[in-house]
Image (cartoon, rainbow, N blue to C red; front, side):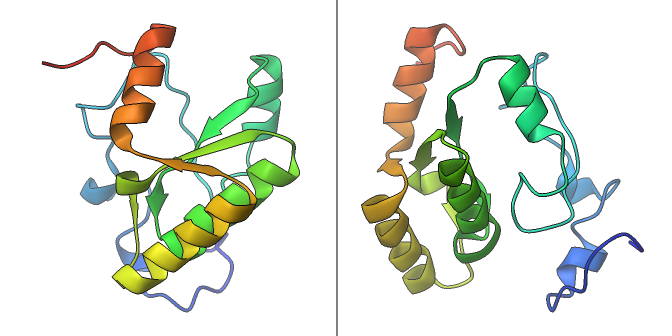
Length: 136
């Protein structure tokens, strides 16, 4: 916790830390090839090895999900766009404390930086790439 910047949100120090049960990857979406690391700032790009990983694997598209739409999700969308990646956001895979903040931020990034789409669209696209199997 000492390496974290000052956050005004208490759960960052209590519930959103490595080792907390709420931070475990849901086995329904886990994949053996997934690369996991910890971030300490709103954007997944800040201070993490993500850029090196994406470049090494010649990845040009990001799918951004998570909490909170108006905070970490938006910061990651902005950085992904700024680094030149195509950005896809499955609308139902992110959320905010207030629905209005969630909707307003998705509408704004959808106008500017990202393709805001349905989860079904993303699932279909990934299935076509052979990344996941379609569920019945």
